[in-house]
Amino acid sequence: ACANWGYHLSSANRDASSKDIEALLSVLDAFARRKLLEWIECMSILDLTADTLACVSGALLWTAAIKASVHNLFLDTKYFIQEFFVPISTMPLEVYHTALSWTPSSTAIKRLYKQSEASHNIALCNALEIDWENCRQTLECPDHLIASISLSSDGEIVVAGTTDGYVLVYNVNTGILI
Image 1 (tube, rainbow, N blue to C red):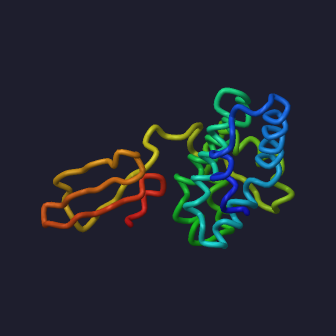
Image 2 (cartoon, rainbow, N blue to C red; image 1 turned 60 degrees about the horizontal axis):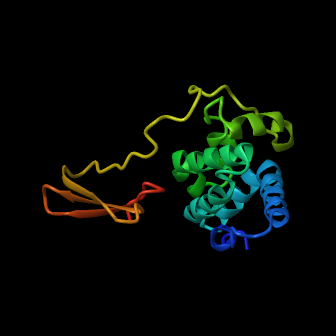
Image 3 (spheres, rainbow, N blue to C red; image 1 turned 135 degrees about the vertical axis):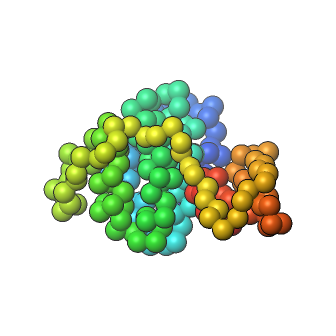
């Protein structure tokens, strides 16, 4: 259930009654404010960190035009996961000890969890950045020179051709070589 709610959410009928939509947004808001970091940690333990981005994208679809505060929190969550994908996916507790500590200080996720730092027994330092950088992902290829690059039509995959004949395929959301 923790890995598939985003898929179900993005497939749900957006023409539902306003009462149903408000109830859904209320649940998303409560989840985001109370259990977001624990959910990311759980997904990492299950080796499903990449799937967190699909779930967050589902939440972003629902909150985009309706509830700005929740939308901003999920948008920051997307950037948070992308920025700290490697430490979170390899060591689940790094959600708290590394990622949150280095999250830019003006972001919704930092402000929310800074208030509840005592409950996680961590000390949050002041991040070096105030907001997320404009560059969301850097794809690294230290052993090859890139000759050409192409983005898939759905925007999910980047393919890079190297000068020595290799073809490298990257996941856009995670920056990981597939």
